[in-house]
Length: 317
Ligand SMILES: [Mg+2]
Image (cartoon, rainbow, N blue to C red; front, side, top):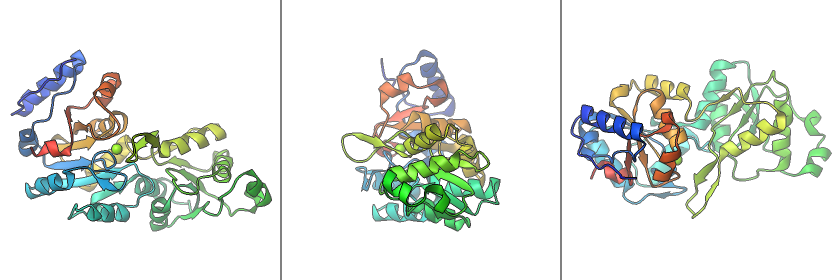
């Protein structure tokens, strides 16, 4: 398969090259920095595998973001990492030397889950949560108490605690990424609560894996959603993170984005690229995270990126 390297000076030339590769299933056109300079106002970045890997910034990315900001581009950050709150994500980026990012520029699947419940199920006051601190923080900001942190053991602890009978009334179940303290008791209780279909069941994101900064991809939040889904014999009422079109529309409305001058940058075709394409944004796959050109070959048509680039650094050089 030949990778087309094109000098894309105009939107029409870019659109023609993209249509050609998608029709013939070649590799996506390589991004030309001039295209960003002339055609794009707003950049929506995925984070893990794009901006950083776990806690370390990807080489050259903070400097590239500073250049894009200096050129007048608006920068937003959307992550499916359910353990992050908007506030904690902004702080994490600042710690990596990425300045000027506020919580208002960030959306996490945790904040999306809390907002979903607040909007669609305003009666929910207490949720059983499989997830971390950021999710609990965002639910609290929406007036929803989280339950589940005390469930830290296995079958013996579950039985000796009295199971569900000993717990507080639960209005909803929210499942996402949990790195610390994930255990049988917690997953079993989440599934038991989810069996009652009167309770809303929300998944934060569908990701099966994430680039944790080691050589292997590690299980991500979507695995916990699937666990509870399988055990409870019930699909979630909503999976609110990328590639949800509702979330993309929310971001677009919130920040008054012009879809024709907005680009989504991600490292996954099935979440990031599909997310951007769902509302007609330009899309760029960077090869610093999960998906490579071989994954583009296997991607469904609505997951094919418009462009590919080695890294975010390519957007300014
Ligand atoms: Mg990613």
